Image 1 (cartoon, rainbow, N blue to C red):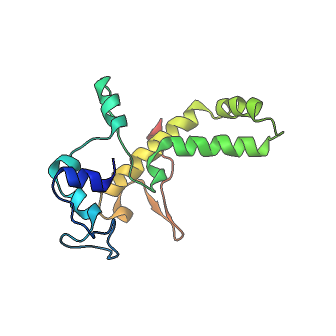
Image 2: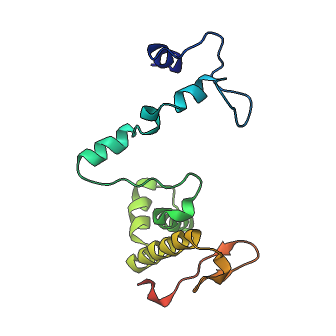
Length: 149
């Protein structure tokens, strides 16, 4: 279904509406996206993937967009790609399992601990006063601590 059909079924469609408003923060009833985002049932609707996973008794946690530093698997995948790049013989079917196994399990635990500290740091104010953190001029980085493992 399209947005026009959904809004039409609800009696909310008006001819001549644009799909999206050209204003950064549109106010009122000027575009179809704005009207569709307002009803409570649309705001509370879970995605199909989330519903399927929760039906099996598991929880799903979505990370904020564009914040790969909050996902430990990104650090792990970076190590795997680094190994594959350095040892590449252009045979990807053989290098990928070896690259995955090349990352030490302790390193993976350190990645997880780093993500936990970064997540806590986002919740604390100010970051520079937090114990165990160092502030660098180029970017705020979190160093490994001895209690990570």
